[in-house]
Length: 279
Image 1: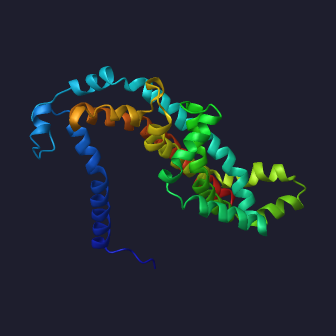
Image 2: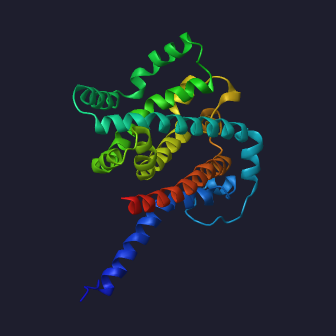
Image 3: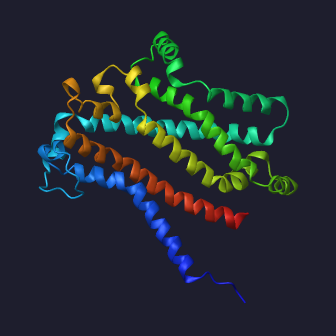
């Protein structure tokens, strides 16, 4: 006889889930509402979720006056390149960190933990000087290298946990069947590691897409600005902010990340199911 959950427990569970989703989604809903409000209504600080008068000019103003589309292209290029490079570097390094023993593994662990201790503002000036000395300052390639450097330790630490969760007996069984190390990695480890790779890719993309401080310091040319830097241009003189176009620009800025997340989410679910079958 199976134990069924009481009906009130199910109701409480779904009520708590709905409240949590509302809590997470309310800022986005409020931002979406603000993007359709007029300047007068926004300046009045009226607390109403739906606009009194729908104003669609905020989106045209955001696209035309602040040059968001080239900045969005720069952000997309930097984020995708950072994601691909980080994932490609993390795979072999995470496997070595999870499987190797001895001083090399300990040194890798110390490097990961130490790299997360120093705040960004402490090393931004030396970083700026190094990039300038190798002529990579004020370039998207230099920004990509910086993003890879900053995201690699955490993604490596996260991915090695996925590798450690894969039983080593599967590799031993492959070796007994005569498979080479490359074949074992390609046919056994990589399919089981797919959820970790997707999670790493999502984290890396979102981190690079939303990063502001490093791009602000390292990029000086307006044609190289990323999307967060372009959104800063809505802040006018003496702190006067164009709230409507800024909200519209922020909504437009979330669309690419939502698309990437939805695509990778399907891959994450498929990878988890494949891993469950293969395991």
